[in-house]
Length: 130
Image: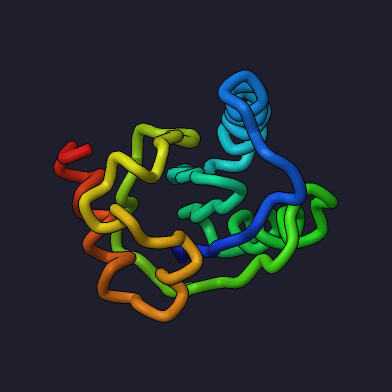
């Protein structure tokens, strides 16, 4: 069964573009191996990430992230079955959050209280509005 998990977390340190790119390279290798696709947003030590794929693979990846020393306050916004992937061609996409109309002037962590905005955000990316 395909599922999606969307979570927020805080980084223990700032990620510059070089560090983010290195993280993305490693994520793409791991995700491709396990059939996981998704999206990572970053702004000022905050992350929001979508992981999608087979339930066992996504749960394993999420658990790995929860145990990663670089993160704190890892909180799932939602975890649910999906009929199809939002990002079928992205082993992991990266975008800076300030490009999103949904996120403008909002901390990423606000989304954990606003599931509708999470869906709006996903649709912005899917349509290529960012």
